[in-house]
Image (cartoon, rainbow over all chains, first blue to last red; front, top):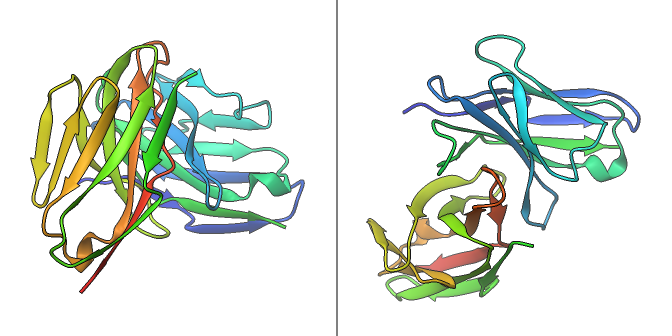
Length: 114
Length: 111
C-alpha cells in the first residue's frame, strides 16, 4: 500500500540553525501539506502546496518557513532560523484531490530545538 | 472561526465494552468531516470521511455517524489493539483544503 514517508525521523538542532524536513508524498497525489503537533496539543495546519505554489497557509507559517518541491518526488519544509517554540512533530500529508481531500499523513519528524 | 471539540479527552474501556466518542464542530459550512487514528509517536491514520448529515461509514468495529453539529465514532466490542488516540478534523467551505483538528480522545482498552 502506498504511503507518505518522511526523513529524518528525529532532528535535533541548535536555536538559530536552519533545518530542512523532507517528505516523499504518495506518487499519484498532487496536493501536499505540512502540519505540526506540539507535544500534548492539537495537530495544526501550516501550509498546502499544489503545482509548485502555496495554496493556503496559516498564521503559523511566517517568513521563517518555506516549502519546495525540488524534484518529482520530494517535498520539503525549511525553517530558516529555528526557535525553541518550533520544537514539535512535523507531519507531511498528501491528497489526490483538492476538495474534498482525504489527506494521508506520514509518520512525522520530531524536531527538537535546543 | 472554525472549532472542533472532542469528548471525552480520555476513555478507559474493558475489552468488549462498547462506547462512543463525540466530535462537536462549529464551521461556517462543512465540506467534510474526517476521523483519524493516531498511535503514540506516529502520524494520523485515515479512517473515514463523512460529507453530509445522516451519513454513516463502517470499518470493522468502528462506525462513524454525522449530524449537523456533531459526529460520533462508535466502537463495538473493542479489543486492546483499538487503543489509540482518535482525532476528528473538519474541512470548511471557506478554508480551502486545510484540516482543522480537535484535541482527540485517548482510548485505552484493557484485556
